[in-house]
Length: 240
Image (cartoon, rainbow, N blue to C red; front, side):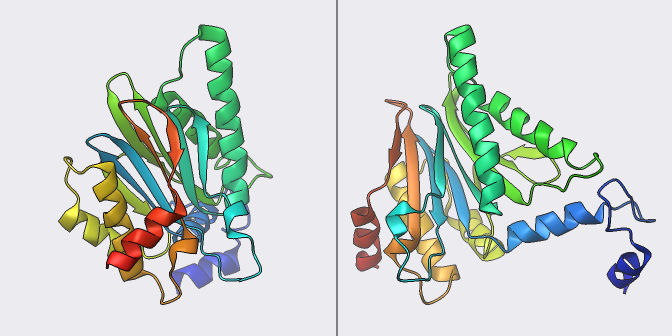
């Protein structure tokens, strides 16, 4: 009933308008958009970081290899998203530029937290300026700094949290429960990939297959962004 009254009173018509109980309704709508987005999982592993995502491609005429859901920001940083992917692409491209400007200016790699704060500053700006709408996307930003692997989640409000393991998007609750039970800081990238694929297969619909998967990792040893080959997904799914 409250949400109907809020809509009737027009509290959700402008991003700068608080409802009587102190809520920014457009921001809450953006967070609901994220929950309806395709699933994305991030893990901090003993030997690096891993991102795994569901492309959610259901049309057989679509070229699945051309759909990109995991993006390289720099050699040591990558990202994936859930929600409105066009919003994510804009944020990713700004982050790529920021990372390259840092290299040119300081002749060194940007730290992961600086990229995260840059994204969140823009997201937060869009929650307090008239004529704008919030970014309807959450990003997982993962990378390797001088003190090891780091994984962050940013949400539409502009807030961010650092995680050992995190999931966003469709099936979030079910996969989070699996991660709570099976994730350990000692897990390797290879074992983490198996865990993520098993979790996605268990929680998502019957049409789940290797073509829908996208994954990438960065190992601490060589700090090189690497995409996972589809054959690896086939191997994991066939073994289960």
